[in-house]
Length: 73
Image (cartoon, rainbow, N blue to C red; front, side, top):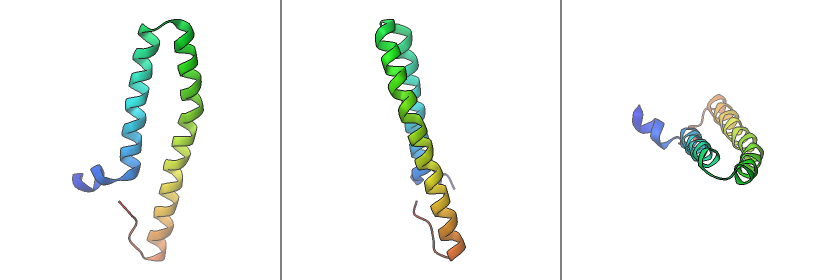
């Protein structure tokens, strides 16, 4: 079960998003406010795209399950 989880592209993408969020937290805490504001702006633009990709993969996996084929890891 855990092996499938760690090979899941949705899980790995969410972990990557978590790591980016933690890096952003510390960047905003310790760098100049102007730099922190720019970084937050970029991340605010990227995170919805990452979420949309994860949702798209879930929809594809569900469609493949309904069709009877095995979804990719």
